[in-house]
Image (cartoon, rainbow over all chains, first blue to last red; front, side, top):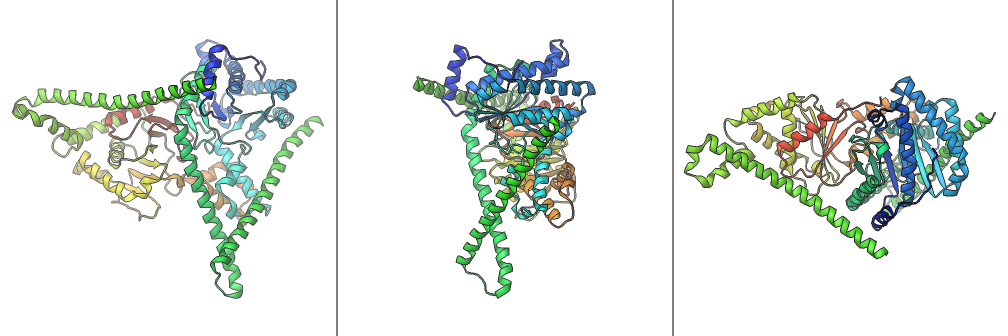
Length: 336
Length: 289
Protein backbone atom coordinates (compact mmCIF):
# COMPACT_ATOMS: atom_id res chain seq x y z
CA UNK A 1 0.00 0.00 0.00
CA UNK A 2 1.23 3.43 -0.87
CA UNK A 3 1.68 6.59 1.18
CA UNK A 4 -0.73 8.60 -0.88
CA UNK A 5 -4.29 7.58 -1.48
CA UNK A 6 -5.97 9.25 -4.38
CA UNK A 7 -9.67 9.79 -4.56
CA UNK A 8 -12.37 12.29 -3.78
CA UNK A 9 -14.78 12.33 -0.86
CA UNK A 10 -18.31 11.12 -1.52
CA UNK A 11 -21.14 13.63 -1.64
CA UNK A 12 -22.20 13.35 1.98
CA UNK A 13 -18.61 13.58 3.16
CA UNK A 14 -18.05 16.58 0.91
CA UNK A 15 -21.03 18.44 2.32
CA UNK A 16 -19.96 17.69 5.90
CA UNK A 17 -16.42 18.80 5.13
CA UNK A 18 -17.73 22.08 3.73
CA UNK A 19 -19.85 22.67 6.81
CA UNK A 20 -16.90 21.98 9.11
CA UNK A 21 -14.68 24.24 7.05
CA UNK A 22 -17.04 27.14 7.70
CA UNK A 23 -15.65 27.15 11.26
CA UNK A 24 -12.07 27.41 12.56
CA UNK A 25 -10.08 24.41 11.31
CA UNK A 26 -7.04 22.88 12.99
CA UNK A 27 -3.91 23.42 10.91
CA UNK A 28 -1.90 20.73 12.62
CA UNK A 29 -3.34 17.45 13.94
CA UNK A 30 -1.40 14.86 15.93
CA UNK A 31 -2.47 11.21 16.15
CA UNK A 32 -1.66 8.45 18.59
CA UNK A 33 -2.67 5.54 16.37
CA UNK A 34 -3.50 3.10 19.13
CA UNK A 35 -5.31 -0.23 18.83
CA UNK A 36 -3.66 -2.09 15.94
CA UNK A 37 -2.88 -5.14 18.05
CA UNK A 38 -6.25 -5.22 19.74
CA UNK A 39 -7.84 -4.97 16.30
CA UNK A 40 -5.78 -7.92 15.05
CA UNK A 41 -6.67 -9.99 18.10
CA UNK A 42 -10.34 -9.23 17.68
CA UNK A 43 -10.28 -10.21 14.00
CA UNK A 44 -8.08 -13.25 14.63
CA UNK A 45 -5.31 -11.88 12.45
CA UNK A 46 -1.56 -11.92 12.80
CA UNK A 47 -0.25 -9.02 14.85
CA UNK A 48 1.79 -7.82 11.91
CA UNK A 49 -1.35 -7.69 9.76
CA UNK A 50 -2.87 -5.32 12.33
CA UNK A 51 0.13 -3.03 12.01
CA UNK A 52 -0.16 -3.13 8.19
CA UNK A 53 -3.81 -2.16 8.31
CA UNK A 54 -2.87 0.61 10.73
CA UNK A 55 -0.49 2.01 8.13
CA UNK A 56 -3.15 1.85 5.43
CA UNK A 57 -5.48 3.76 7.69
CA UNK A 58 -2.79 6.43 8.03
CA UNK A 59 -2.67 6.88 4.24
CA UNK A 60 -6.45 7.17 4.19
CA UNK A 61 -6.47 9.65 7.06
CA UNK A 62 -3.92 11.78 5.24
CA UNK A 63 -6.28 11.90 2.28
CA UNK A 64 -9.14 13.10 4.51
CA UNK A 65 -6.86 15.67 6.10
CA UNK A 66 -5.93 16.99 2.67
CA UNK A 67 -9.60 17.43 1.79
CA UNK A 68 -10.20 19.14 5.12
CA UNK A 69 -7.33 21.62 4.50
CA UNK A 70 -5.25 20.24 7.36
CA UNK A 71 -1.71 20.91 6.19
CA UNK A 72 0.25 19.17 8.87
CA UNK A 73 -0.10 15.79 10.56
CA UNK A 74 2.14 14.27 13.23
CA UNK A 75 1.87 10.59 14.10
CA UNK A 76 3.34 8.47 16.87
CA UNK A 77 4.73 5.51 14.97
CA UNK A 78 7.23 3.98 17.36
CA UNK A 79 8.14 4.96 20.89
CA UNK A 80 11.52 4.33 22.50
CA UNK A 81 9.55 2.33 25.07
CA UNK A 82 8.35 0.04 22.24
CA UNK A 83 11.86 -1.44 22.04
CA UNK A 84 10.75 -3.36 25.15
CA UNK A 85 8.31 -5.43 23.08
CA UNK A 86 9.22 -8.94 21.98
CA UNK A 87 12.15 -9.22 19.60
CA UNK A 88 9.80 -10.67 17.04
CA UNK A 89 7.43 -7.75 17.07
CA UNK A 90 10.16 -5.10 17.09
CA UNK A 91 11.84 -6.75 14.12
CA UNK A 92 8.50 -6.95 12.34
CA UNK A 93 7.90 -3.25 12.93
CA UNK A 94 11.38 -2.34 11.72
CA UNK A 95 10.80 -4.44 8.62
CA UNK A 96 7.48 -2.71 8.01
CA UNK A 97 9.16 0.69 8.38
CA UNK A 98 11.87 -0.34 5.93
CA UNK A 99 9.30 -1.41 3.36
CA UNK A 100 7.33 1.77 3.78
CA UNK A 101 10.30 4.08 3.45
CA UNK A 102 11.48 2.17 0.38
CA UNK A 103 8.02 2.55 -1.02
CA UNK A 104 8.15 6.24 -0.22
CA UNK A 105 11.32 6.64 -2.26
CA UNK A 106 9.63 4.88 -5.17
CA UNK A 107 6.71 7.26 -4.92
CA UNK A 108 8.90 10.30 -4.94
CA UNK A 109 7.24 11.85 -7.98
CA UNK A 110 3.78 11.49 -6.60
CA UNK A 111 4.89 13.06 -3.33
CA UNK A 112 6.37 15.94 -5.29
CA UNK A 113 3.12 16.40 -7.18
CA UNK A 114 1.22 16.74 -3.90
CA UNK A 115 4.01 18.72 -2.26
CA UNK A 116 4.32 16.34 0.71
CA UNK A 117 7.25 16.95 3.02
CA UNK A 118 8.12 14.05 5.33
CA UNK A 119 10.02 14.57 8.55
CA UNK A 120 11.07 11.93 11.03
CA UNK A 121 11.23 13.04 14.66
CA UNK A 122 13.21 10.97 17.11
CA UNK A 123 16.67 9.63 17.82
CA UNK A 124 17.61 7.79 14.63
CA UNK A 125 20.79 6.52 16.31
CA UNK A 126 18.65 3.97 18.14
CA UNK A 127 17.59 2.33 14.85
CA UNK A 128 19.37 -0.23 12.66
CA UNK A 129 21.78 1.47 10.28
CA UNK A 130 20.06 0.47 7.04
CA UNK A 131 16.77 1.94 8.30
CA UNK A 132 18.60 5.10 9.35
CA UNK A 133 19.93 5.50 5.84
CA UNK A 134 16.56 4.92 4.24
CA UNK A 135 14.95 7.48 6.53
CA UNK A 136 17.69 10.02 5.81
CA UNK A 137 17.17 9.54 2.08
CA UNK A 138 13.41 9.92 2.35
CA UNK A 139 13.72 13.04 4.48
CA UNK A 140 16.23 14.65 2.14
CA UNK A 141 14.18 13.74 -0.94
CA UNK A 142 11.06 15.51 0.31
CA UNK A 143 12.50 18.35 2.37
CA UNK A 144 11.83 21.05 -0.21
CA UNK A 145 8.11 20.25 -0.48
CA UNK A 146 5.88 22.70 1.28
CA UNK A 147 2.19 22.01 0.66
CA UNK A 148 1.61 19.44 3.37
CA UNK A 149 3.77 18.03 6.11
CA UNK A 150 3.83 14.61 7.69
CA UNK A 151 5.90 14.22 10.83
CA UNK A 152 6.56 10.63 11.80
CA UNK A 153 7.69 10.19 15.40
CA UNK A 154 9.98 7.18 15.31
CA UNK A 155 12.21 6.08 18.18
CA UNK A 156 10.64 8.99 19.99
CA UNK A 157 9.52 9.94 23.46
CA UNK A 158 8.73 13.45 24.52
CA UNK A 159 10.96 13.38 27.59
CA UNK A 160 13.82 12.21 25.42
CA UNK A 161 13.09 15.03 22.98
CA UNK A 162 13.09 17.66 25.74
CA UNK A 163 16.30 16.24 27.19
CA UNK A 164 17.86 16.30 23.75
CA UNK A 165 16.86 19.96 23.38
CA UNK A 166 18.60 20.73 26.68
CA UNK A 167 21.64 18.80 25.45
CA UNK A 168 21.69 20.87 22.25
CA UNK A 169 21.53 24.09 24.23
CA UNK A 170 24.32 22.87 26.48
CA UNK A 171 26.27 22.11 23.33
CA UNK A 172 25.69 25.71 22.22
CA UNK A 173 27.03 26.88 25.57
CA UNK A 174 30.08 24.64 25.20
CA UNK A 175 30.73 26.05 21.76
CA UNK A 176 30.50 29.56 23.15
CA UNK A 177 27.52 30.37 20.91
CA UNK A 178 25.03 31.15 23.69
CA UNK A 179 25.08 31.77 27.43
CA UNK A 180 23.17 29.79 30.02
CA UNK A 181 21.05 32.89 30.66
CA UNK A 182 19.83 32.82 27.03
CA UNK A 183 17.91 29.61 27.71
CA UNK A 184 14.21 30.36 27.52
CA UNK A 185 10.93 28.66 26.69
CA UNK A 186 11.10 29.94 23.12
CA UNK A 187 14.68 28.73 22.65
CA UNK A 188 13.88 25.31 24.07
CA UNK A 189 10.97 25.00 21.61
CA UNK A 190 13.39 25.85 18.82
CA UNK A 191 15.71 23.03 19.85
CA UNK A 192 13.07 20.29 19.86
CA UNK A 193 12.83 17.81 17.00
CA UNK A 194 9.59 19.59 16.07
CA UNK A 195 11.24 22.99 15.70
CA UNK A 196 9.96 23.46 12.15
CA UNK A 197 6.29 22.92 13.02
CA UNK A 198 3.71 25.00 14.81
CA UNK A 199 2.27 23.32 17.91
CA UNK A 200 -0.56 20.90 17.11
CA UNK A 201 -4.05 22.33 17.44
CA UNK A 202 -5.69 18.97 17.98
CA UNK A 203 -4.40 15.68 19.38
CA UNK A 204 -6.40 12.53 18.78
CA UNK A 205 -5.82 9.26 20.59
CA UNK A 206 -7.79 6.23 19.51
CA UNK A 207 -8.71 2.99 21.31
CA UNK A 208 -10.14 4.65 24.40
CA UNK A 209 -6.92 5.17 26.37
CA UNK A 210 -6.86 8.52 28.16
CA UNK A 211 -3.16 9.30 28.48
CA UNK A 212 -0.46 10.89 26.33
CA UNK A 213 2.14 8.10 26.71
CA UNK A 214 5.10 10.46 26.42
CA UNK A 215 3.98 12.01 23.12
CA UNK A 216 4.46 15.74 22.39
CA UNK A 217 4.06 16.68 26.05
CA UNK A 218 5.70 20.08 25.55
CA UNK A 219 3.93 20.92 22.30
CA UNK A 220 0.41 19.99 23.42
CA UNK A 221 0.20 22.11 26.56
CA UNK A 222 -2.47 24.26 24.88
CA UNK A 223 -3.87 21.71 22.45
CA UNK A 224 -7.36 20.28 22.27
CA UNK A 225 -7.10 16.64 23.42
CA UNK A 226 -9.65 14.22 22.02
CA UNK A 227 -9.79 10.62 23.21
CA UNK A 228 -11.87 8.34 21.00
CA UNK A 229 -12.78 4.75 21.73
CA UNK A 230 -12.55 3.42 18.15
CA UNK A 231 -9.52 1.23 17.34
CA UNK A 232 -7.13 2.84 14.87
CA UNK A 233 -7.63 0.44 11.91
CA UNK A 234 -11.38 1.10 12.18
CA UNK A 235 -11.01 4.89 12.23
CA UNK A 236 -13.45 6.58 9.87
CA UNK A 237 -13.98 9.96 8.25
CA UNK A 238 -16.83 10.53 10.70
CA UNK A 239 -14.59 9.92 13.70
CA UNK A 240 -12.28 12.60 12.34
CA UNK A 241 -15.20 14.99 11.84
CA UNK A 242 -16.33 14.38 15.40
CA UNK A 243 -12.86 15.22 16.71
CA UNK A 244 -12.71 18.40 14.62
CA UNK A 245 -16.12 19.43 15.91
CA UNK A 246 -14.87 18.98 19.43
CA UNK A 247 -11.89 21.16 18.54
CA UNK A 248 -14.24 23.84 17.23
CA UNK A 249 -16.32 23.81 20.40
CA UNK A 250 -13.12 24.29 22.42
CA UNK A 251 -11.47 26.69 20.02
CA UNK A 252 -12.23 30.01 21.70
CA UNK A 253 -11.29 29.10 25.26
CA UNK A 254 -8.06 27.37 24.24
CA UNK A 255 -7.12 30.32 22.03
CA UNK A 256 -7.64 32.67 24.98
CA UNK A 257 -5.51 30.51 27.23
CA UNK A 258 -2.81 30.46 24.55
CA UNK A 259 -2.83 34.25 24.31
CA UNK A 260 -2.55 34.62 28.07
CA UNK A 261 0.35 32.19 28.07
CA UNK A 262 2.11 34.03 25.24
CA UNK A 263 1.81 37.37 27.03
CA UNK A 264 3.15 35.83 30.21
CA UNK A 265 6.08 34.38 28.34
CA UNK A 266 6.93 37.78 26.85
CA UNK A 267 6.86 39.28 30.32
CA UNK A 268 9.22 36.61 31.65
CA UNK A 269 11.64 37.21 28.77
CA UNK A 270 11.61 40.95 29.40
CA UNK A 271 12.28 40.39 33.08
CA UNK A 272 15.17 38.05 32.32
CA UNK A 273 16.65 40.52 29.84
CA UNK A 274 16.35 43.33 32.34
CA UNK A 275 18.15 41.36 35.03
CA UNK A 276 20.95 40.37 32.67
CA UNK A 277 21.31 43.85 31.21
CA UNK A 278 21.37 45.38 34.68
CA UNK A 279 24.01 43.03 35.97
CA UNK A 280 26.13 43.67 32.87
CA UNK A 281 25.72 47.39 33.36
CA UNK A 282 26.46 47.01 37.06
CA UNK A 283 29.79 45.46 36.15
CA UNK A 284 30.56 48.36 33.86
CA UNK A 285 29.57 50.85 36.49
CA UNK A 286 32.21 49.48 38.80
CA UNK A 287 34.64 51.05 36.36
CA UNK A 288 33.55 54.68 36.74
CA UNK A 289 31.43 54.47 39.88
CA UNK A 290 28.46 56.56 38.65
CA UNK A 291 24.90 55.12 38.86
CA UNK A 292 23.10 55.06 35.52
CA UNK A 293 19.97 57.09 34.80
CA UNK A 294 16.77 55.68 33.30
CA UNK A 295 17.71 56.56 29.72
CA UNK A 296 21.07 54.84 29.98
CA UNK A 297 19.37 51.82 31.48
CA UNK A 298 16.88 51.59 28.64
CA UNK A 299 19.70 51.85 26.16
CA UNK A 300 21.65 49.13 27.92
CA UNK A 301 18.56 46.92 27.85
CA UNK A 302 17.91 47.29 24.13
CA UNK A 303 21.61 46.80 23.45
CA UNK A 304 21.55 43.60 25.49
CA UNK A 305 18.41 42.30 23.77
CA UNK A 306 19.92 42.88 20.33
CA UNK A 307 23.05 40.99 21.30
CA UNK A 308 21.09 38.12 22.80
CA UNK A 309 18.98 37.78 19.68
CA UNK A 310 22.10 37.79 17.55
CA UNK A 311 23.66 35.01 19.70
CA UNK A 312 20.50 32.92 19.52
CA UNK A 313 20.28 33.35 15.75
CA UNK A 314 23.86 32.20 15.28
CA UNK A 315 23.32 29.23 17.56
CA UNK A 316 20.15 28.13 15.77
CA UNK A 317 21.92 28.36 12.41
CA UNK A 318 24.73 26.20 13.74
CA UNK A 319 22.21 23.72 15.12
CA UNK A 320 20.41 23.46 11.77
CA UNK A 321 23.68 22.87 9.97
CA UNK A 322 24.61 20.19 12.50
CA UNK A 323 21.28 18.42 12.07
CA UNK A 324 21.34 18.68 8.29
CA UNK A 325 24.81 17.25 8.09
CA UNK A 326 23.68 14.28 10.19
CA UNK A 327 21.24 13.37 7.40
CA UNK A 328 23.58 14.10 4.49
CA UNK A 329 26.39 12.12 6.15
CA UNK A 330 24.05 9.17 6.57
CA UNK A 331 23.09 9.35 2.91
CA UNK A 332 26.67 9.67 1.72
CA UNK A 333 27.60 6.76 3.95
CA UNK A 334 24.87 4.76 2.25
CA UNK A 335 26.22 5.53 -1.19
CA UNK A 336 29.82 4.75 -0.36
CA UNK B 1 -23.27 28.20 -0.88
CA UNK B 2 -20.56 29.35 1.52
CA UNK B 3 -23.17 31.33 3.41
CA UNK B 4 -25.37 28.28 3.77
CA UNK B 5 -22.46 26.17 5.05
CA UNK B 6 -21.58 28.93 7.48
CA UNK B 7 -25.13 28.99 8.78
CA UNK B 8 -25.26 25.22 9.08
CA UNK B 9 -21.99 25.23 10.99
CA UNK B 10 -23.27 27.85 13.41
CA UNK B 11 -26.42 25.82 13.95
CA UNK B 12 -24.40 22.67 14.59
CA UNK B 13 -22.14 24.40 17.09
CA UNK B 14 -25.10 25.98 18.83
CA UNK B 15 -26.69 22.54 19.15
CA UNK B 16 -23.50 21.07 20.57
CA UNK B 17 -23.15 23.84 23.12
CA UNK B 18 -26.76 23.41 24.20
CA UNK B 19 -26.34 19.66 24.54
CA UNK B 20 -23.29 20.13 26.72
CA UNK B 21 -25.06 22.67 28.89
CA UNK B 22 -28.10 20.43 29.13
CA UNK B 23 -26.07 17.40 30.12
CA UNK B 24 -24.23 19.16 32.92
CA UNK B 25 -27.49 20.73 34.11
CA UNK B 26 -29.22 17.35 34.10
CA UNK B 27 -26.36 15.82 35.99
CA UNK B 28 -26.84 18.23 38.87
CA UNK B 29 -30.62 17.85 38.76
CA UNK B 30 -30.44 14.09 38.72
CA UNK B 31 -28.13 14.06 41.68
CA UNK B 32 -30.31 16.41 43.68
CA UNK B 33 -33.26 14.26 42.83
CA UNK B 34 -31.46 11.11 43.87
CA UNK B 35 -30.27 12.84 47.03
CA UNK B 36 -33.81 13.85 47.91
CA UNK B 37 -35.04 10.34 47.32
CA UNK B 38 -32.37 9.04 49.66
CA UNK B 39 -33.24 11.58 52.28
CA UNK B 40 -36.87 10.63 52.09
CA UNK B 41 -36.08 6.97 52.38
CA UNK B 42 -33.93 7.61 55.42
CA UNK B 43 -36.57 9.78 56.95
CA UNK B 44 -39.30 7.22 56.52
CA UNK B 45 -37.14 4.40 57.79
CA UNK B 46 -35.39 5.91 60.75
CA UNK B 47 -37.14 8.98 61.94
CA UNK B 48 -40.81 8.60 61.35
CA UNK B 49 -41.80 9.59 64.86
CA UNK B 50 -39.52 12.42 65.74
CA UNK B 51 -39.87 14.14 62.45
CA UNK B 52 -43.58 13.68 62.04
CA UNK B 53 -44.42 16.92 63.69
CA UNK B 54 -41.96 19.03 61.78
CA UNK B 55 -42.41 18.27 58.15
CA UNK B 56 -41.03 21.62 57.13
CA UNK B 57 -37.74 21.10 58.86
CA UNK B 58 -37.20 17.61 57.70
CA UNK B 59 -35.63 18.38 54.37
CA UNK B 60 -33.53 21.16 55.73
CA UNK B 61 -32.19 19.14 58.61
CA UNK B 62 -31.18 16.25 56.46
CA UNK B 63 -29.68 18.55 53.92
CA UNK B 64 -27.59 20.15 56.62
CA UNK B 65 -26.42 16.77 57.75
CA UNK B 66 -25.38 15.89 54.23
CA UNK B 67 -23.78 19.19 53.40
CA UNK B 68 -21.86 20.30 56.41
CA UNK B 69 -21.87 17.23 58.60
CA UNK B 70 -21.43 19.20 61.76
CA UNK B 71 -22.92 16.71 64.15
CA UNK B 72 -22.89 13.35 65.70
CA UNK B 73 -22.82 9.77 64.71
CA UNK B 74 -22.57 9.81 60.95
CA UNK B 75 -19.02 11.17 61.05
CA UNK B 76 -17.01 8.07 62.01
CA UNK B 77 -19.29 6.03 59.76
CA UNK B 78 -18.58 8.18 56.80
CA UNK B 79 -14.88 8.31 57.48
CA UNK B 80 -14.86 4.56 57.76
CA UNK B 81 -16.82 4.22 54.54
CA UNK B 82 -14.38 6.45 52.64
CA UNK B 83 -11.43 4.53 53.95
CA UNK B 84 -12.92 1.15 53.00
CA UNK B 85 -13.89 2.63 49.64
CA UNK B 86 -10.26 3.52 49.07
CA UNK B 87 -9.11 0.06 50.15
CA UNK B 88 -11.68 -1.69 47.99
CA UNK B 89 -10.12 -0.33 44.80
CA UNK B 90 -7.59 -2.51 43.06
CA UNK B 91 -5.36 0.47 42.49
CA UNK B 92 -5.42 3.91 43.95
CA UNK B 93 -3.29 6.77 42.64
CA UNK B 94 -0.63 7.86 45.09
CA UNK B 95 -0.58 11.30 43.48
CA UNK B 96 -3.67 12.93 42.04
CA UNK B 97 -3.87 16.19 40.09
CA UNK B 98 -6.97 18.35 40.30
CA UNK B 99 -6.99 20.43 37.13
CA UNK B 100 -9.55 23.22 37.09
CA UNK B 101 -10.19 24.72 33.66
CA UNK B 102 -13.18 26.82 34.70
CA UNK B 103 -13.61 30.47 35.48
CA UNK B 104 -14.49 31.34 39.08
CA UNK B 105 -13.02 28.52 41.13
CA UNK B 106 -14.91 27.39 44.21
CA UNK B 107 -12.68 26.98 47.25
CA UNK B 108 -15.13 24.90 49.24
CA UNK B 109 -15.58 22.32 46.51
CA UNK B 110 -11.84 22.01 45.93
CA UNK B 111 -11.37 21.68 49.67
CA UNK B 112 -13.98 18.91 49.77
CA UNK B 113 -12.14 17.10 46.99
CA UNK B 114 -8.86 17.40 48.86
CA UNK B 115 -10.43 16.00 52.01
CA UNK B 116 -11.97 13.08 50.10
CA UNK B 117 -8.59 12.36 48.53
CA UNK B 118 -7.06 12.17 51.98
CA UNK B 119 -9.91 10.09 53.33
CA UNK B 120 -9.61 7.39 50.66
CA UNK B 121 -5.85 7.29 51.18
CA UNK B 122 -4.23 9.33 48.38
CA UNK B 123 -0.92 10.71 49.61
CA UNK B 124 -0.26 13.63 47.27
CA UNK B 125 -2.73 16.11 45.85
CA UNK B 126 -1.78 18.79 43.31
CA UNK B 127 -4.21 21.59 42.56
CA UNK B 128 -3.87 23.57 39.35
CA UNK B 129 -5.74 26.24 37.47
CA UNK B 130 -4.34 27.98 34.42
CA UNK B 131 -4.76 31.50 35.83
CA UNK B 132 -2.83 30.65 38.97
CA UNK B 133 -5.77 31.81 41.12
CA UNK B 134 -5.37 29.09 43.74
CA UNK B 135 -1.70 29.85 43.92
CA UNK B 136 -2.33 33.55 44.49
CA UNK B 137 -4.85 32.75 47.22
CA UNK B 138 -2.86 29.95 48.76
CA UNK B 139 -3.54 30.76 52.37
CA UNK B 140 -7.27 31.14 51.82
CA UNK B 141 -7.40 27.73 50.19
CA UNK B 142 -5.56 26.15 53.10
CA UNK B 143 -7.96 27.76 55.53
CA UNK B 144 -10.95 26.38 53.66
CA UNK B 145 -9.34 22.95 53.47
CA UNK B 146 -8.85 22.91 57.23
CA UNK B 147 -12.44 23.99 57.77
CA UNK B 148 -13.82 21.34 55.43
CA UNK B 149 -11.58 18.77 57.05
CA UNK B 150 -13.19 19.58 60.37
CA UNK B 151 -16.63 19.47 58.85
CA UNK B 152 -16.27 16.27 56.91
CA UNK B 153 -14.00 14.25 59.14
CA UNK B 154 -14.70 15.83 62.50
CA UNK B 155 -12.12 16.57 65.16
CA UNK B 156 -10.61 13.14 64.88
CA UNK B 157 -9.93 13.98 61.28
CA UNK B 158 -7.00 16.09 62.36
CA UNK B 159 -4.92 12.94 62.27
CA UNK B 160 -4.95 13.56 58.53
CA UNK B 161 -2.62 16.48 58.81
CA UNK B 162 -2.12 18.62 55.80
CA UNK B 163 1.30 19.56 54.70
CA UNK B 164 1.10 22.48 52.40
CA UNK B 165 3.91 22.73 49.93
CA UNK B 166 4.53 25.99 48.17
CA UNK B 167 7.45 28.10 47.25
CA UNK B 168 5.51 31.22 46.34
CA UNK B 169 5.37 34.58 48.04
CA UNK B 170 3.26 33.33 50.94
CA UNK B 171 5.29 31.78 53.65
CA UNK B 172 5.02 28.00 53.65
CA UNK B 173 2.45 26.53 55.97
CA UNK B 174 3.81 23.45 57.55
CA UNK B 175 0.83 22.48 59.60
CA UNK B 176 1.93 20.00 62.20
CA UNK B 177 4.50 17.33 61.70
CA UNK B 178 2.73 14.75 59.60
CA UNK B 179 4.40 13.91 56.33
CA UNK B 180 1.59 11.85 54.89
CA UNK B 181 -1.03 13.68 52.83
CA UNK B 182 0.69 16.48 50.97
CA UNK B 183 -1.14 19.21 49.11
CA UNK B 184 0.62 21.26 46.49
CA UNK B 185 -0.86 24.23 44.70
CA UNK B 186 0.49 24.65 41.19
CA UNK B 187 0.33 27.44 38.66
CA UNK B 188 1.45 27.68 35.03
CA UNK B 189 4.94 28.69 36.20
CA UNK B 190 5.46 25.16 37.50
CA UNK B 191 5.00 23.84 33.98
CA UNK B 192 7.28 24.74 31.11
CA UNK B 193 9.03 27.42 33.12
CA UNK B 194 10.33 24.88 35.63
CA UNK B 195 11.75 22.83 32.76
CA UNK B 196 13.43 25.98 31.44
CA UNK B 197 14.90 26.64 34.87
CA UNK B 198 16.24 23.10 35.08
CA UNK B 199 17.74 23.54 31.61
CA UNK B 200 19.38 26.80 32.69
CA UNK B 201 20.82 25.11 35.72
CA UNK B 202 22.32 22.33 33.60
CA UNK B 203 23.64 24.81 31.03
CA UNK B 204 25.24 26.84 33.80
CA UNK B 205 27.04 23.78 35.07
CA UNK B 206 28.27 23.19 31.51
CA UNK B 207 29.33 26.83 31.34
CA UNK B 208 31.37 26.30 34.50
CA UNK B 209 32.90 23.18 32.98
CA UNK B 210 31.36 20.98 35.68
CA UNK B 211 29.91 18.60 33.12
CA UNK B 212 29.79 18.05 29.40
CA UNK B 213 26.67 18.46 27.28
CA UNK B 214 26.82 14.77 26.39
CA UNK B 215 26.36 13.76 30.02
CA UNK B 216 22.85 15.20 30.24
CA UNK B 217 20.25 12.44 30.52
CA UNK B 218 16.52 12.07 30.95
CA UNK B 219 16.92 10.88 34.54
CA UNK B 220 19.12 13.88 35.35
CA UNK B 221 16.40 16.29 34.24
CA UNK B 222 13.80 14.16 35.99
CA UNK B 223 15.68 14.40 39.28
CA UNK B 224 15.94 18.17 38.93
CA UNK B 225 12.22 18.48 38.19
CA UNK B 226 11.18 16.27 41.07
CA UNK B 227 12.83 18.72 43.44
CA UNK B 228 13.85 17.53 46.86
CA UNK B 229 10.47 16.12 47.84
CA UNK B 230 10.66 13.09 45.63
CA UNK B 231 6.95 13.20 44.87
CA UNK B 232 5.90 10.60 42.27
CA UNK B 233 4.37 11.73 38.96
CA UNK B 234 0.60 12.07 39.13
CA UNK B 235 -1.00 8.80 38.03
CA UNK B 236 -4.37 10.47 37.64
CA UNK B 237 -5.49 13.95 36.70
CA UNK B 238 -9.15 14.77 37.18
CA UNK B 239 -10.01 17.69 34.93
CA UNK B 240 -12.96 19.90 35.89
CA UNK B 241 -14.54 22.00 33.19
CA UNK B 242 -15.59 21.80 29.58
CA UNK B 243 -12.25 22.78 28.00
CA UNK B 244 -10.55 19.67 26.59
CA UNK B 245 -6.95 20.66 27.22
CA UNK B 246 -4.39 20.48 29.98
CA UNK B 247 -3.74 24.24 29.68
CA UNK B 248 -0.12 23.96 30.71
CA UNK B 249 -0.40 21.41 33.54
CA UNK B 250 3.10 20.05 34.30
CA UNK B 251 4.17 18.88 30.83
CA UNK B 252 7.13 16.86 32.09
CA UNK B 253 5.20 14.92 34.72
CA UNK B 254 2.12 13.78 32.79
CA UNK B 255 3.86 11.18 30.67
CA UNK B 256 1.75 8.27 31.93
CA UNK B 257 -1.02 10.22 33.62
CA UNK B 258 -4.60 9.15 32.97
CA UNK B 259 -6.93 12.07 32.27
CA UNK B 260 -10.49 11.85 33.45
CA UNK B 261 -12.89 14.71 32.82
CA UNK B 262 -15.78 15.90 34.93
CA UNK B 263 -17.96 18.76 33.71
CA UNK B 264 -17.49 20.99 36.75
CA UNK B 265 -16.01 21.08 40.23
CA UNK B 266 -18.82 23.26 41.50
CA UNK B 267 -21.21 21.34 43.78
CA UNK B 268 -19.31 18.15 43.13
CA UNK B 269 -20.44 15.18 45.17
CA UNK B 270 -18.41 12.38 46.66
CA UNK B 271 -20.15 9.98 44.26
CA UNK B 272 -18.79 11.91 41.23
CA UNK B 273 -15.31 11.80 42.68
CA UNK B 274 -15.68 8.12 43.49
CA UNK B 275 -16.82 7.47 39.92
CA UNK B 276 -13.64 9.09 38.58
CA UNK B 277 -11.52 6.87 40.85
CA UNK B 278 -13.35 3.79 39.63
CA UNK B 279 -12.74 4.80 36.03
CA UNK B 280 -9.06 5.23 36.84
CA UNK B 281 -9.08 1.77 38.35
CA UNK B 282 -10.28 0.34 35.04
CA UNK B 283 -7.37 1.89 33.08
CA UNK B 284 -4.63 -0.53 32.09
CA UNK B 285 -1.11 0.53 31.22
CA UNK B 286 1.16 -1.50 28.99
CA UNK B 287 4.19 0.81 29.35
CA UNK B 288 5.22 0.48 25.72
CA UNK B 289 4.92 -3.30 25.67
